Image 1 (cartoon, one colour):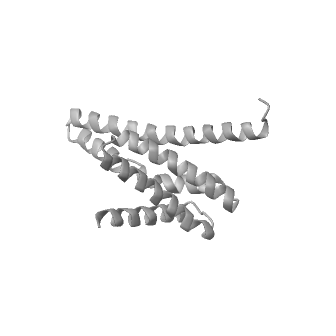
Image 2: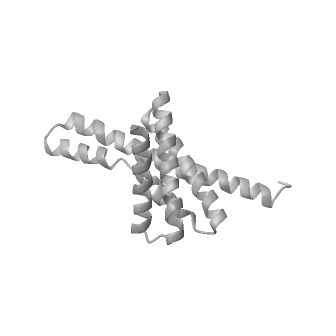
Image 3: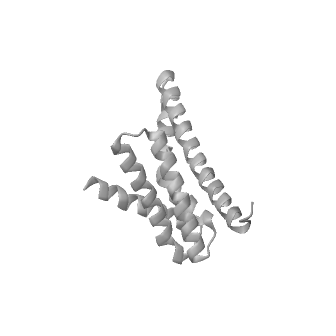
Length: 147
């Protein structure tokens, strides 16, 4: 039951950020689905035993692939789906805890939390870029089959 609640919450969060980013009304469901699918990948990989950073990387990659598919099918910019879809993965709570520990002079915990938040943020960025690079390579190979 907890997983269903997390999936529903990630759907709502992603769709709500779609509203904040002025996404077209028709794309809000797809924004929510993008975030929900990404969170599902994250949860599955975490439960299998992969680390948080790798799970975030894979989920980010999956969100970008999903966003590319939605963008192609519905003729909408990729960024609408990818930005809204990434929201459930953003380590905002972790960054907050790191700053709170800095303020409370618990520097060792603060540095550890800040490092983890940075690694998760980097994994999100790498997942987005890696998926886009693969998409561009596939497009180029279709345009220039002789190369």
